[in-house]
Length: 305
Image (cartoon, rainbow, N blue to C red; front, top):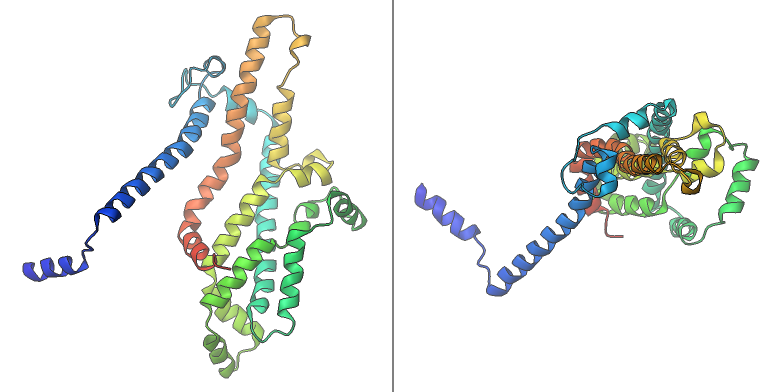
């Protein structure tokens, strides 16, 4: 048994040449350097957010918190608007992502079918909107004429389908769902809707996870639409609320005579920047591990357009 195992391991072992080993070493070194370059700023931001304002403004924070303090988070969460912003962002993210995924799936599936008449023209029309848009002012006028200004729908409906995500989904359906499977469903008497609901959707979990993550991150980080379309502060998402908090804590040095007060306010402003980044990023980081498995598979299958 031992000899058989040794024989199988020798068969599976790949003999690497000197060039292969050099390439693997360079590749690994490059990836390590990139990883360090990405992790260092992230670690610094987290460390600075848990440090005192004096340590942050003095530049004494590197990779570990200095003079551990929750002052930045305390200042943020003292605002009632932060909790309202969290609730609004959660609403826009959940319902916006659900709307985006549904619209993208029901548009991509028929466009992936070879028997759809005019599918090339429709696909080109979608791609055209990705390359050329009407611009900010015409878009604002459309939203205004539809009566969507200062409503939650203004944060969801205008971005119903992302064309890039649509193309990835079309490719996923073409490369993953065999036509024979659809024909088998037809032979069994299933209608197009039944085939889509009972066959296509269960097999599309990887691409649905990819779409959900892309759209959710976009909705969570969205602020420009709210800045343009929303006036009521009760509808503001978290990003706008955090921006207002940062602006409120920014000061004009010419208006202050007390140097100590100037230093304290400047230190708090610097501390708030890092705390705001952490507060805005944590929800997305929490969601990602739950969709990572499907995310990687969906990206690899639907990546070749």
